[in-house]
Structures are given as C-alpha cells and as structure tokens.
Amino acid sequence: MSDVPVIGVLALQGDVREHLAALAAAGADARPVRRRHELDAVDGLVIPGGESTTISKLVDIFELREPIDKRIAAGMPVYGSCAGMIMLAAEVLDGRADQRGFDGIAMTVRRNAFGRQVDSFEASVEIAGVDGEPFHAVFIRAPWVERVGPDVEVLGRVTEGPAAGRVVAVRQGNLVATSFHPELTGDRRLHRYFVDLVRAA
Ligand code: GLN
Image (spheres, rainbow, N blue to C red):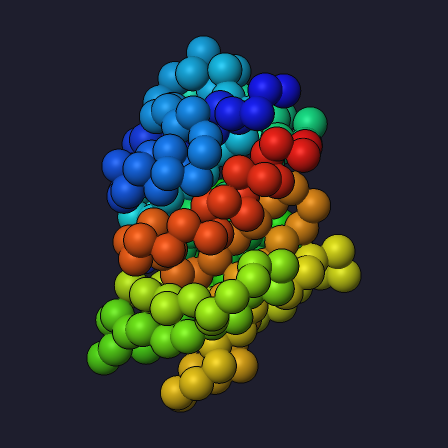
C-alpha cells in the first residue's frame, strides 16, 4: 500500500464531513462511501457519529451490510466513533429491537448511557498507544462499554466526574471504537493512530 492510505467514511448519516477533514489532516486520502464500488476502493473505513438506528437502516437500504461484514472478516481496519461504536458492537443494550450492527468487536455497549439529563458532557480521557496530553473528549448522547471479550483491549476510560472508570475506547485487532468524537475537537491524534493502523494492515 502507498504511504497515503485510502480511507472511506461511511456517508449515510452523521458527521461525515468532520471525519473526512480529520482523516485528510492525518495524512489519508479520505473519501465518502455510499456505494459498494466505493467500499471496494478503500483500505480502511470510519463509521461516524450520528444515529445508529438510522445508520443501521440505511446500511440495509444501500445494500452495504454484507459487503462491510465481509471486508471486516477479511481484516479491513474500521474506526467507529459514538454511533459508529454502536455499529461495531456485538451486543447493544437500550437499542431498538430492529437495529443491527456489523460482525465487529466482542463487546456490549449501552446506548445513551451517560444519562438523560446530561445529554452531552466533556471529560478527559487517556488513550493507550496515543502519546501526549489526555484527550479532551466530547460525549453527545454517547454509549459506554459495559463488557468486553477476552480479545478486546481497553484503550481508555473516563478519568473524572460521575462516569469515572467507564470504558470509552477499545480495540480488537484492526477494529477501533470510541464513545467520544475526536473529529469535533481538532485533535487529530486518534485519526493519525487509525491512519497508521491502516498503513500497517
Ligand atoms: N445516541 C446515538 C445512537 O444511538 C449516538 C450519538 C452520537 O453518535 N453522537 O446512535
């Protein structure tokens, strides 16, 4: 693979533009993915924040479910933030009965976990494998991770406030997920981490 990996952003719903900009700034050739042939052209994929129930429906309408599951099984790196984390979870609590994710990370996530009064909040999170300051993490109706399988590495937890200790970043092989939205804060370290992962894959 070239030094500039081609990374797609699943562009069905959610904050697609922000991820495209963050990936480009992190050294990728970033492209929206809505169609099968666009998926075939990428080395890695980002599933953005948005609304997982809507993304789940649109994945079926755009006939992308089986192709994405197959690419994941073949080792394609995928990074999901927030709704994207939910789409990568093997099990979802407080989901809609008909929402379905990909064959992704062996974890259980709880949707909208941080409480109904506090829809959004910010906290600092340290991510294993990412040097420097803790992340200034923005959570918007975010999930957290309640259980992980033995092959899942916990990369980060909330370090302060009422949600302290909650798992909000994980990795299993080439799949990475965060509850928060680094694409919204101008901190490109997580996108660089993912671009490096795609380059190495
Ligand atoms: N609550 C949303 C969901 O269930 C996720 C929110 C987000 O991505 N900011 O998909």
